[in-house]
Length: 307
Image (tube, rainbow, N blue to C red; front, side, top):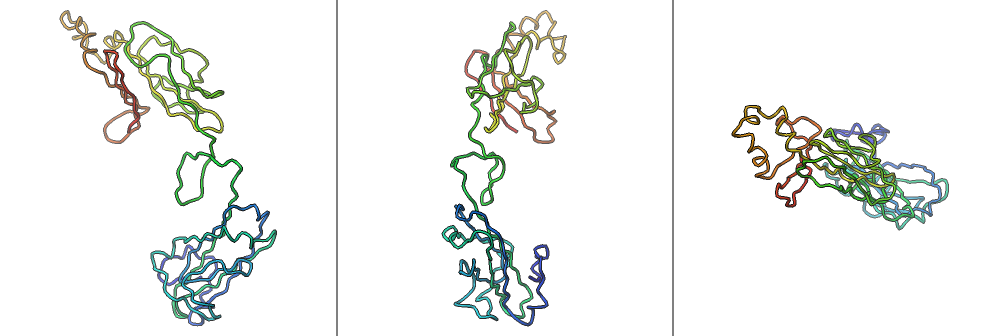
C-alpha cells in the first residue's frame, strides 16, 4: 500500500511503494488466518477498501473481484479507476454461500491487487473477512440501532411491562398512599421524588405503598436483567393549600381579604401544566423534561417526555 494525494496515510500498515511504483501495477498478498468450526458459520462477508481493483481468492478459489478483466496477468492493471470518494469506504461482498471453502484450522485469503498503471502513485488494499454464527435465540432487541454495522450492546429478550400507579396525577386535599405496579414478574421498581430520573442504580427501591401528604412529583421506572427497562413515568400530585401558602406566592395576595377566598377556585379554573426536569431550566439550552396536563374537572390529562 502506498499513498500519493488521496489522504489515506492512516490506512497504511505495509508500504510497498518502492516495490510497485514505476515497476508494476500488480501486487500479490497472502493473509493466513485460522478458523474454528467454520461449518457453523451462517454468514461470511468480505469487506474491501481498494484502489483501484482486485481479485480475491479464498483457499485458492476466486470469490470476489472489482475492476478486473479476465485472468489478470502478473503485471496486470485495473480496468478502470475506483472513484476517489469510494476508496476509503468498505465495499461488502456476501460470501455466505462459499463457507464450504473454509477449512478447520489454517486458511489463506489471497488478494491480487491491481493499480491503474505502474506509474499511478496511489494504491490501497484493506481486506476484512467477517463471519457470524447466529445464536439459537432468533429474536432479540437492541437499545441502540447500528444500521449497516455490527450489532452493539446487550441483546435483550424483551422489555419490562410499563409501570402503573394506583393514583393518577391531579389535585388532592388529603394524604394518601400510592402503589406502583409492573406486570413483569421479578422486575425491580425504582422511584424518585426530587425530579431526577430513576435508573437501575439510582432512586429508591420500591418495596411498598408510598405516603403522599404534600405536593409531590413521583417518577418511577422498572428494571430486570435481560430485559429493556421501562420509560420513566411521572405523576404529579398537587395539594392546593400548600401551593397557596408556598414561598413563591405573594402574601399580599394569598392573605388579602378579597383575593384569598378566590385562590382555590382560580387555581382550578383552567388546566394546569406541570413541567419536571432534573436540571434547572434557564432558556439557554435544551433540557429533558416531563410535561403533564392536569384537568381540574377530572377529565383525562396527559404526560409526555420532551426536550
